[in-house]
Image (cartoon, rainbow, N blue to C red):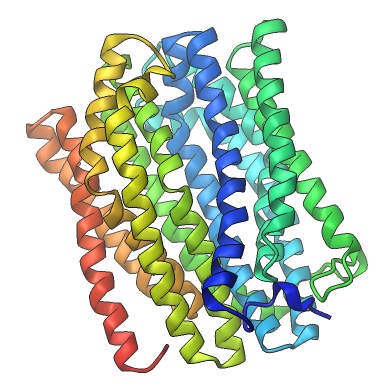
Length: 445
């Protein structure tokens, strides 16, 4: 049975969305903190080259995380829809198919990651002075990929049921553990970037184990029973139908970001470190967006399963407006304090100058990026993942890459790689406004 306190098909729409989003936001804040801890501690205790190595592979790490988060969202939408329809047998089949996917994906990712790292780094044109540390960091990270895969998939199961509190508890514990291990491995054990990677994978693995423990013991329909773990054909098809476009969307966007990183790598290590630090700060800015996106995706899917269109419409309107307003407020703070914030990563003047330049330009346009993310989540919840995939691949990938491969060869300036982001955020936002209005006219929600 599903516990009513987590159901999003009943009660106050705003309260349900906010109650779900706040723990997600706090949890992602801690997650971003322990991801950023790698860069902060590496930059301060090891140096600029090590910081460049860790931040330059960030786009590759995001690609991998984004791929499995895409499948996690796909599984979450299917499970949430089944919960909304109160089909407990379907919920169980969806959950156990998700776990089976995680087992297969963990093995594939570990093997491909460890043996493919040197090839990928060469393809990214990683500078010779950065290459050894970037390769070491990635290989250690990939060895612990089982924690990464299972954490994202299993948290998706919990969140699909409307439970965002328990993932928060586990994440706070593991974030604190990660930061302690990060500092200890580098400061007291004399380890380099491999210490930062090791601390991260230990934190991810413990997070995954804690979520698994919760799902093994719950009495709700999302309970995991090891003997039931297998692929169920129809559920696998549904998860792939929604999850694969989302995964490919995240994957190709991050693949494009890797190509952009290759362009950034053509500048010096100060530019690499400064832009990398700014990107880390950007991750904090979009935490509210991610929280509202997850809340809306689950909210829309559950209410779609329950056939409550009026409730969906009210939730979508509230979520879109709230995300944009919150991002605007955070963007103002980022603009004002960006020199200080970038300086936390590395105090060299050139690094701060590059990071501040990017942060201040992008701050004016973060609302557009936030709107695009939340609109994409709404469409996934509606079971229409193809549209946001096409929009993102066109606006955020093709336009960026083609611009850098053409204009970027003539106009080799760091400003080009900075401005390409706001321009493409604006393009995707325009498309989403028109498509959401189209769906409304069709009475899809």
